[in-house]
Image 1 (spheres, rainbow, N blue to C red):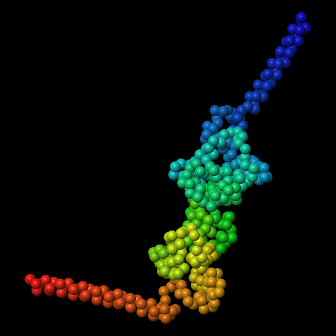
Image 2: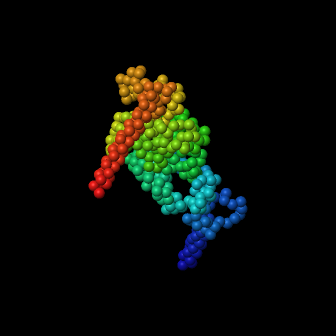
Image 3: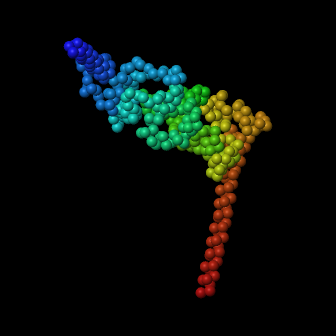
Amino acid sequence: MSVNTSLLNRLGLFIGILLLASGVYLLDYSAPVVSQEATDDDDAEITEMDLPPADSPGYCLICHEGSTQTFTLADGSSHDVGVDLDALAGSVHGTSNEDGALGCADCHDGVSFPHNDPLPETDRAYTVARSVNCTSCHEDQTENLADGVHYSALIEGNLRAASCVDCHGSHDVQPVDEPIWAASETCGDCHTTTFVEYEDSVHGRALFEGDANAPTCTECHGVHGIQHPTTALFRNRSPELCATCHADADLMTEYDISTNVFDSYLTDFHGSTVALFNQTAPNVATNKAVCYDCHGVHNITEADDSKSQVVRENLLVTCQQCHPGATTDFPESWVGHFEPTVESHPFLFLVDLFYDVLIPVTLGGFALLIGTDIFRRLRQRLMGKGSQS
């Protein structure tokens, strides 16, 4: 009986020691995991009371501030865990935001720690997925985006199409018009060949020289609701797009460009046909020339530039795109957007002058004859009534 008591005492002592050791271990390792770089006091004790609220930026920054850790997706692409706080503060969502700086949860709503949600498998899918966060605040832009060519491509499964993050960035989002060429440079990240042409055009050179009036990519194509530029609708309405600037008398005066170019195009057989299609059947294709058929699209130069498609030396080749049988004298039959002058087209100038005089004189003569005839008839009628009385 004494042996059993001794054995039980020893067993109890062993269990007590084991429990004590387990308690020490649990106290040591169940404490919140906090970076030791968060404090300069190595002796400071960190408890749950020291942690920021779980829905505050400070809570997220325990792990994400200055972290050099990365995570790897299934396709092997690697991404940083750390957040650049200076870039975030200097963004449109940072300290300059008129509604106050956004917190992590404003964009990453519903994200909790630990992060157990499965990550996208590819780098591209991860970028597109991050753009979904933008839709919760930017409702109008999202609605316009739904009608655009980029969003349509994404819905169809083409993940190469641009998403919010591709154009605006993520933590470092900046104003879209600072500098004024920022939007066009962003488009050039994907549309590289087009951007090179545009950059060397009369519009592109003006823009990168700081001319705020120069058309940018978004001013011609739109912003979020960008439509496909190869549709019949875009083609039929493209003269109106050019007219936004080239029919503005005040704006064109600054560049010594005549606004008659648009009016003369509409009176020309090319423009009148396109205008008719635009008014009656805008989605029906027409083979009549629009502005960019003659002047170019992104590679437009000054009309008198040696590389211009409408300079007299190159005009025949331009005309032959639609009129393959055109001969060397074909362009001579078209005055273009300019009113005839004695120096440029003397015969046409005289014909125009003749009709400018003939038509008013003829109509004025008819009006005078009709007027005098009406006066005569009234006078006779009044005189007849007077004689009867």
